[in-house]
Length: 443
Image 1 (cartoon, rainbow, N blue to C red):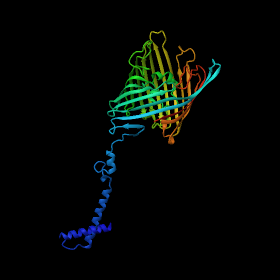
Image 2: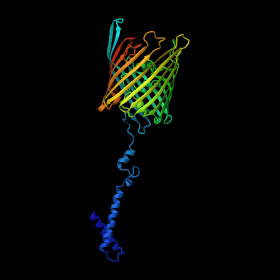
Image 3: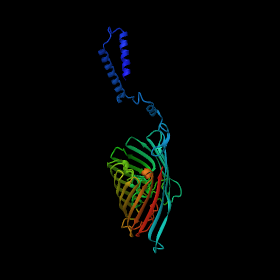
Image 4: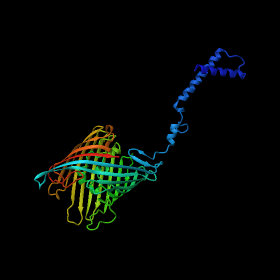
């Protein structure tokens, strides 16, 4: 630095002398003063160069790396919470996926063999669900689609599950048309098959709530689901329960197919985030969340009307607790048949506790109460379940996309009819124990 300053001082002095401005040779004091000024100017220039305010901007003076980042086209394939294919402008995207749930079931029933003389044990393996789908958007981000195919246990082949198109009117309003789950119970509509804490949904859901015949329906739905709002509302007009994979015609004799259905669900979030409300496990929850919701459904059949309803309270505590409580009821009102009206109902409490990133324990108690005026034998069916989840991947990073679940289920009064999807077999008024072990994976 001293040599640089000396050179600059020399050039300054020689230039001034050459120009004839100095009429006399400068004194040592003058030279010292000039050197001091030059040092001050050099220090000021160095400070200005180091200041963030004068650093190159990302637009006008971007370094090469910043320039490339701003001008490189989007990748046309890769992984972003799942596989994807897309055009460089992202106007057309395709996100394929599949899931498998493979399980072993052991079912023990009291006095269920040889006319009630002996106990019965049934056990074996099954592929409960094998599902493939593709979804994405076309011609811009506002036109969405989904196509899903499924092969369940006891199914003879691959069947169409989801098939719908949707349109985002704005940040809040969304409409879709096709075949999909109607908004009835939170267990079925709000939480996916993979995100349940136990191997399967509750007996209450399978009998009173969103039963197998209600799982999919064909129709049009409107949703108010702005993620920033505390209120979500979903409504659907459809062909009713059991209308999946049907055409517009009434069924030939006997005409038992549903003719019309209306579904609706209202949810209010007091705190937290909506993503946590979509989980049945404590794994993956991010915040303390509390949501109250109500679901309603009516379906008109040729000789009866069915009404279903549910009230749900859902609480999560980030990566620790998940608590779900619900009350559900189903009213069947025959028309011109002489058969009396029937009302079945029940309640559920379900708790999950994450012990660490890899292990979670859970418990469930629910009860289904059938109409005592119509059911002359046993009409109360409790279900008690406890279990554990082992999340796979490094420190359980795979979450519900790759996990092993073991649950033990006790049915003190059995079940009123076969519920093979749950692993339950008819055993009215007698003890039934069921052990289920499942491995599930999703890509």
